[in-house]
Each structure stands twice: as structure tokens, then as C-alpha cells.
Amino acid sequence: MSDKIPIIAADRVSDHAKKTLDIVRKFVEERCIPADPIFHAQIGDDGPAKWDHYPTVIDDLKKEARKLGLWNMFLPKGHYKESPGFTNLEYGLMAEYLGKSRVASEAVNCAAPDTGNMEVLAKYGNEAQKKQWLKPLMDGEIRSAFLMTEPDIASSDATNIKLSMKQEGNEWVLNGDKWWSSGAGDPRCKIYIVMGKSDPNNKDPYRQQSVILVPADTPGITINRMLNVYGYDDAPHGHGHLTFKNVRVPASNMVLGPGRGFEIIQGRLGPGRIHHAMRAIGAAEKALEWMLYRINDSTKTPFGKQLKEHGVILEWVAKSRIEIDAARLIVLNAAIKIDAVGAKGALKEIAEAKVLVPSMALTVIDRAVQSFGGAGVSQDTPLANMWANIRTLRLADGPDEVHLQQLGKNENKRGRDATDNILRQKKITEELYAVYNVRHIQPGPQAKL
Image (cartoon, rainbow, N blue to C red):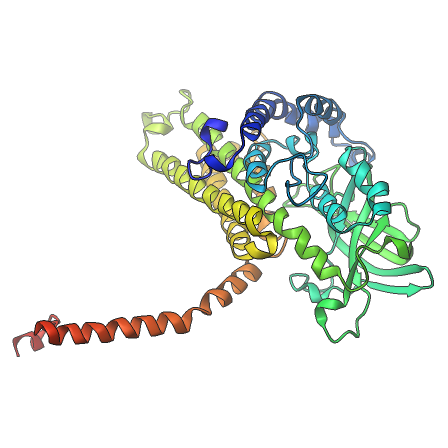
């Protein structure tokens, strides 16, 4: 892996990170990918009982990962005292490999939503909150969920969030519904990071929300169901639909302070979008490998030729290679920008990566599916499940349309400058016509005049 770092980023990757990249590659390729089927087999398909346990192969892989020094690589140096010492760029390169396996990210304690939740606690939590929740999360002893999206509103606009938070003495009382609470199904999930509306009358719509820590076993919380993603329930992780009814939480569980919710979620989602994007690039690479596996299968000879001998198939391969490499540069550029100026200063680059990469990965996966024919949409390859997982990224952390609208608005701020520049250039051209005593003759009858 270290010898495949794009040349424009190579001098920004430390020797330690390069060595770690090689270890990550070997661990994912030789230990995690072969363990993916074991993970699914251990979950089983026994209805509700599948939510009562988690695959023990994860614990064995975690032990191996820790011995190899692969643990919590996602916390970037210079931003968190808990960081193991890698930059966003360096971890991004590692995350690409992690994205090739279902179990790899959790095996190295770099799985969503725990990564974002650990960042929230590390950046905004007080010492008591860190001791109670950050430490066991960083040790991989528990898991967590992030509860923001709600079923009865347009959650793409977070000002619509309406789960009620009312303070009564030394407690906050929560009422409302949350869904797409990823990770809530895991029996190891012990803490919810919940966004709600604590000050609905505040004139500033971005100061009405707060984020609070809610232990998963708090009375008044009902897990109504787990949502499917194109038919997949993602057990034991799950995507929960939860109801809060008079859920009482100590005031000391408030993160940063009332009204700081938007500040917190923006700090959380920026790096997380980069992590998702790099893992998606890893998924695209895996899909391309499966496509190469299929088209070189000598037993598959439609119309008397192997698939690799059909021109359109090689075109799919070539386009996939170009698109993956181009998308990787977009993401690494965003990671470098975050390292240089922080996530807030890299909003444009993050949004570009967030929009571009999932669409690219879906295109590559779809080509691989097509190359497999009927097998591609079945359980006989990982491709169908990969497509379903990546498709969610066009909605998660804000739908593409929200990011595109903001990108378009910001880009259009250059409209006046672009117009003035073009008009200025046209004026200079007219002056040059006079200086050189020529004119631009357009095709047509007027050219004879």
C-alpha cells in the first residue's frame, strides 16, 4: 500500500504511517476479508435472536489488531491529545483499505458511528464525560449510537429537529422519536449521543439545539424496530427507530452547554464524511477486483469469448480505474485541507468528496454486478450488499442535494467577478482588432460584404 500512495501526497506521509499502511493492508487482505463470511455466519438468520449477540470473531480480530498497533488511528494528531499520531491524510489512506472489509473498521476500533462519537467526546466532552464514556469507547469495550434524524420531519434541515429537551431542576427531560440510529441494535451499545431542541424560542435557529449523552438503558426509551436498507437489517449493528417518553438525563450529561448542538454536529460530521468517502473508495477497489476476477474466469465464455475479450468490458475496467483514481485525489485533497486549516475551513473540499465518491463507487459496483450477471445481485458475491451500503452515503451526513445547493451558492458568488473578467477581456479584444486592423469574419453570407 505504501508504494501506491499518490505521488502528490507521498511527501506528506510519514515513514511511520507508511509502515502502518503496509500492516493495515496485510491485516485487511489476509485476516479481515477472509473473516467477513465468518462474521455473517455467526450472526445467523434466527429472527429476533440475532440482536441478542454479536459475532465473536470480532473480539479475536481486535486482539490481533492491538498487537499490531492498529487501534484508534482516526483521531488526527494536532487536534486531539488522544491521537495515536496520524494525520487525516494518513488515516484516509488506511481507511481506504478498511473499506474493503465488513469487519476491518471495527477490528481496529475505527468504525462508525463510534469514530464520530469519540471525536465529539474528545473535542467537546468534559473530563467526567471522557472518563465515563470516551475511555471505554477508545478501549473498544462498548459501542455507541448517534441520534439525530427524525421520522416526521425533513431532517436534511437540522433546524427542523424537534425532539424536546426541557430542563427540570438538575435533569433534562426528553420526548420524541429518532430513527436511522445506526448502531442502536448492538447489545454492546451503551451510550446514545442525542441531538434535540432545548430552546425552541431562541431567535437564532442555530442556537435552539443541544447535544446530550443518554445511557442506552435509561428508562423511557423504546426501540420500536430496526430499519432495513434495501432488505438488509445490518444485524447486530442495526438502524434503530427509537421513542423517548419522559426520559430523564442528568444535567451534567449536556455536552459543551445548551444551545451548542449545531457547533458540535458540524465538528463531528466533517471528518466523518472523509472517513466514509475513503472507505467507499476501498469498496470501489474491491468491486473492481471482483470484476477482474469474473472477466478472467475461463469458464465464462459468452458468444465464444471470455468476458475480458469483449471490448465493452475492458472499457468498464478502464473507466472504473480512472474514476477511482480521480475520486481518491478529491478525498486526499480534502484531508490535506482539514490537516492544514481544520474541518471548518475545508467545507468546500469535504462537500465535493461527500458528493462525488459515493456516486463513483455505486457506478463501479454496478459495473461489477453487471459483469456477474444474475450472480451479481445474489448473495453469492458481496456486491449487492456493498451497493446497498454505499447507496446510503448519498443520504447519510446530509443528502447530496443539500451539499450541492451550498456548493452552487458559494461558487455562484464568483458570478460578478467572472462576468466582469469576461467583459473586460472582450473589450481588450475589440481594442486589439483596431490595433492590428483586422476583424473577425463569421461564416455566412455577410462574409462576402
